[in-house]
Length: 350
Ligand code: AMP
Figure 1 (cartoon, protein in one colour):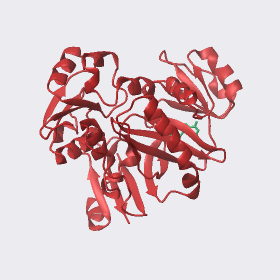
Figure 2: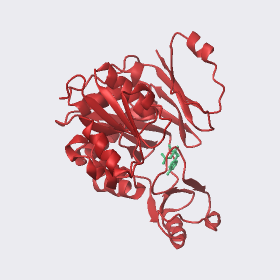
Figure 3: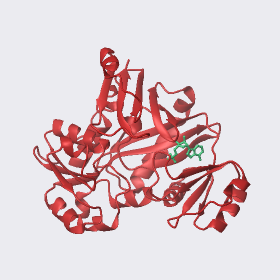
């Protein structure tokens, strides 16, 4: 158990790191952010900041010496340089990162433990795409194996002739059949080092242009019918990885049951509502798990809750939001409101 005043290192400097650092501060911990970008919104609320490249092993080793435990808020941290960090300090571990960084490894791993992803085939060369489309069917979505997030690195393919001229990146892609779903939901769990697992309620998640726009409770009946099976899979994933911390698995609710979409080995945008909408937020429970503290209650505090993302480019009417007594406004402190950039979110409880 980390004592008060201990330092938790966070790899990644975005809004997830910012909200983790704020939760850690409430529990009396200091956070040290490691991020390659100089304008880290997490570093602004943390006690220390190392601004260095992911590949800089010396900087990573010095960072590790300054921390008592280390976690990450970004799943694409390159794995090799992390070998300078003692394995026992890092939670969740390296295996979760390795699997989540490659869509194909992730789908294979989930299949091996009994889960059902969308039909897919790895496409590592241009010639493979035609056979993938023939086998999986159209319409489908071609996704980069690595570094894709928020719908980036994805191409919708409606029919076979649309594949002409698509250049497959060297790092490879995966072709997935388009799943016909009723809705999308996520399972967010926290697992402690001694194996205890707790789940938050599953929200209905709505995406716009591949980016989460909205989460709400209660979710439709189909989610309640499928959440048990989805939770069982998420728990199996966490156990197989010896996972410590918050894990998110995204699902499509289909007529045939829950179809696994992807996992994030970290706190997740579809869990931001837990800051005000649950007894213990995903951020606090992640810090508790990493610090070896007892987990907090994950129960929702109300039956109804909505979380809306504030996406860059939209004019923000702060006064209007602040005038709504049910609204909790969170801004991430990002100076530049580029299109598609997550600038903040608003949660309304009750
Ligand atoms: P991803 O980054 O893979 O989670 O994709 C972002 C969003 O695109 C998902 O949340 C879905 O709304 C949509 N999407 C991704 N893959 C599929 C699929 N195989 N079938 C239908 N919709 C998908």
